[in-house]
Length: 147
Image (cartoon, rainbow, N blue to C red; front, side):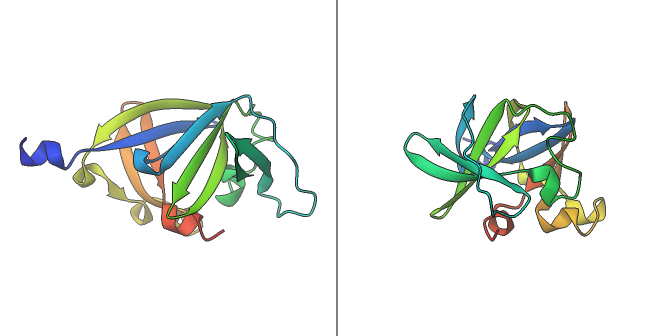
C-alpha cells in the first residue's frame, strides 16, 4: 500500500437546509430515519429532545441554532435523519435533511475554517472540504462534545 492510500480517511457528509456538514466517519455511530423525539421541556433552545437509538439514549441538537444560522424548523426542513456522533464515551445527535455521501479524503485537502468563516461558526467548525456537492463544514468533535 502506498503512502497516499494510507493517509486517506472517510468523511460522512449530510445536508441541513442547503448547507453541507461533515465529520470523519469514525465518529459517526448511527444514522436513523423516522425516529420520534422525546422533548425535554426545560432544555436549552438548541436541544430538540432525546432519542433512543437501539437502546442508547442520545441528546438531539439543532446544529443550525448552534451556528446561529436560524433553526431547523424555520428553515423549512423536515428532519429525515438523525445522525449520532460519538467521541470517547460521549454522544450527541443532530437533525438532518439527508445523508449526502461518504467520501474519501486526505488531511491535506482540508482548509482551515477560520480563514473563511465567522468566529461564531468556528466555535464548532474547524475545517472545510471542497466536495463535488459543494463546501462541507467539518464539525469539531472535541468542541461539540463540550455542550
